[in-house]
Amino acid sequence: MPAQVRVVEVGPRDGLQNEPGIVPTETKIELINRLSKSGLKHIEASAFVSPKWIPQMADHREVFHNITKLSDVNYAALVPNLKGFDAAIEAGADEVAIFSAASESFSKKNINCSIKESLARFNEVMEASKRKNIRVRGYVSCIVGCPYEGPIKPKNVVRIAKALYDMGCYEVSLGDTIGVGTPSTIRALLDEVVKHIPIDKLAIHCHDTYGQALVNTLTALEFGISVVDSSVSGLGGCPYAKGATGNLASEDLVYMLNADTLLFASTVLPNLAGNSLPGPSQSRDIDERWKRVWPSNPILEKVQEGVRPQPGFLVISRVEDNESLKGVCSFIF
Image 1 (tube, one colour):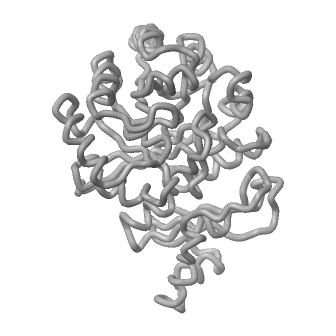
Image 2 (cartoon, one colour):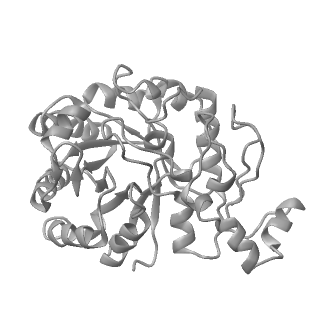
């Protein structure tokens, strides 16, 4: 296991992009601001993609222009091409992420082009990023399975991941987009990928369709990966992978990594789109278990008294307001 794990919060982008209703811009801004104050250091804030394909991200400029940036937080944007890159940098993104897939069919559904064409587009992005000294992160989708092609061979993942790394991505995130991975398939995949890319240049991005996101992430961590993508309250899905459910919940990840860290996000954070949000922690009644193990909770008592808890704690308070994040949660870190 790595001594430290870097968490990449993808909730504002990957988490919200599949919500059926359009989340108000001010709500997105408030969510990002509160995530910033929670102690997270890397937040993927939006995507500069065509609103025709992903309407939820149409307000990307407004989001970036109006969030309150903290100097020690990195705010990233997903971009599909050079046009998106230019717009993201103009809006104030600190870095960008590009994305391809290990499945030809998924690539065509997701970004309307072949894998070869997508990599050509990203070469243009890389050239521009070097001129402007902007870091680029890479994503590989469908590392285990594809909704259109079925199981994916590790060699296909290696080919795309290596292409992104070789063109200059400082890190490549391996995404189990439809959540069909298991510890054995993740381990077999990493066995092949690390032959071509250093382990410290890889990240893992697991979806929880079959409840395997946490154990698959643990498998990757035990393998040596030290960067994990996650989403607050397990928000997420993919517009082009029907049936795939949310991301690994950030609070579940932190709970696994540090049992002394208190995150009640999924038990107290109403869904921004207005529907109920039974995240993984909520469905397992982690808050009730915590009360049984530790009936007198000094952390919550300190919060109620207005005293800041020790660093490493993230506390979110309950309110009954699904229309706005104002007052919904108070992050203390």
